[in-house]
Length: 333
Image (tube, rainbow, N blue to C red; front, side):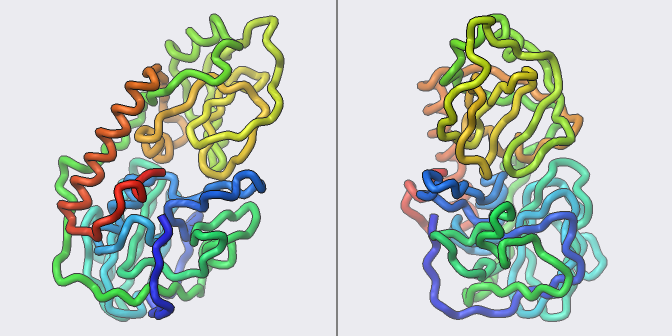
């Protein structure tokens, strides 16, 4: 969702240490895939939305996506921040602070998002949202093309991050524990089979009955998995004519090792055996190398029902946190 704001901006942070890879993201850049521009945006959209809601922002406000090891930031102005997503140690002026809740910070305070203990990506939201120029309708960073975000790149030491002009809330909202996701090392991802599941026979059984390991080859384009080979039928073609791809599509390349595509891919020429349903993508986004993944199949009707229930849960959380009301269609991916 595009969040329209006035042109006012305020200093939010100075970057003392950038972390392993910290980028500005929102919910994504839509409408340009036909031109080779991927959606980008936050990989774990559940955690990103909740971070924004905790500080009173709408879902589409830009925030920081922290990969594995986060930044150390010096606060430049009075505001609220919230960190969600991966289980990290959050330090405020050297003292441990709670995640999944809003924190009031003052000029001169230091925030440090330490290495993730579980999960892979944390999200840091600030009052008013991170203020960077809109590029093709989004503030998300696509590092591969140096597009959007902060000069199209991850944060670096010395950067000054601006925020929108909204006022900090008086209340310090907190997400109740029962709504927090648990990041396990054993993950089951629900999929809708297709569009080329007819390329597989025994391979389909292997795909649905085997355990795969998350390999070290993971990024915002996709996750490559290790495990038993998923073979195509002997008569099935080695590849397909390249066609548009969506986040969650599971490709089977010639070596038979699944690749789950994410938000920085627009087309693919490998057969797709299934697509991970949208409510399960945050669990993949939080998976780390060595984590174990199993797939299961649901029908399209079941996928729609799961999606409706997930969106209803998101809306309940938004209302609980008294975040700005939005057109329900703006919550769609």
